[in-house]
Length: 317
Length: 89
Image 1 (cartoon, each protein chain N blue to C red):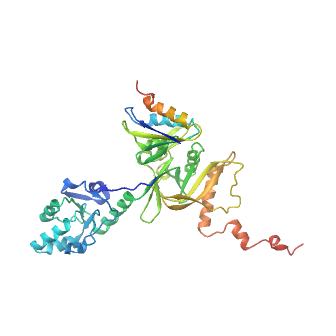
Image 2 (spheres, rainbow over the protein chains, first blue to last red):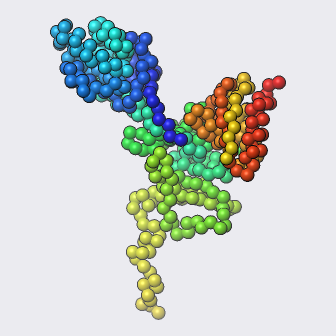
Image 3 (tube, rainbow over the protein chains, first blue to last red):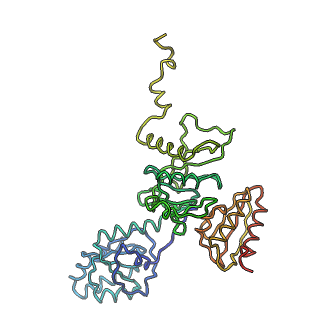
């Protein structure tokens, strides 16, 4: 169920500690909606070239903008501010704790524009803000399954309810791998087109093991057993062993799982008596890593270097 | 597949104990059962999944079941909502 977000109240960014917001002006309009994930620096927009200033984007004022405005004659400055603020941008963030002159505030107020002042330099301000906005506006989806970090790979273990996902995950945690989310993982597409998964805040660090109830992995195994978020590399689908179904016997299947338009490699693992799932999953990830680094599968190797028998006879009798 | 809209009428909403009862009940049926709330859809057999909805009193949940015993499942789970998860008299 992909979900697109229409807008975010501008004020929400004030709550982000990493942005170090120290002052707010025109707070009355702080609820204006931001509708674009990329912040914008007005730059030449202040000189009157307004063609590319987009309503809906958070505006960043750095030393350049502030210095330019400061050096204008009073009448010119009023005209320039009026032209710019009449575009009704959702809000302005000023960097480096620069002073905001009274006439800016007044003109911004006339056009319902709030102003926040941050202590950060312009570059980190923009990068932190865009990282946050990208995540906010990203397409999101909830997937049923356990998301884990196994040997540095983000692995989502899926399968029908009661098949043993959580139990297998618990074994993997016990082996030293990290849990990101049990049962429900939330994915979003980040600015690099990577699928990043994390747990819903309500169930972060929690795991449900039938017979034990809900346990907190962070409390029991320590903070090295949990991770905040992880890019998805591999899906492992556990399914009930079906004697009629043909499972991959030669390691040649290339299955994919589609999430948010991306194809993620998938392995279908049949669950049956006597199969130690956590070890099989561990080996599956090792094999996945080997393939990723260019190692050939058994069949590919065989094709390139056929054994004497297969080539039609051997020399030694 | 059948669907049924269901209002949460118990004071505490879908808190842990209620969610546990709900997932326990859902696990008795072979059908695939989902709870849909706003844009979120979670497996009713997953306790943690239900908790992520954080649905409070007054919210409307859509129950959705697909399978051989879908009718019985919706009836039983709907009943649990109506009985306020057996926690209030």
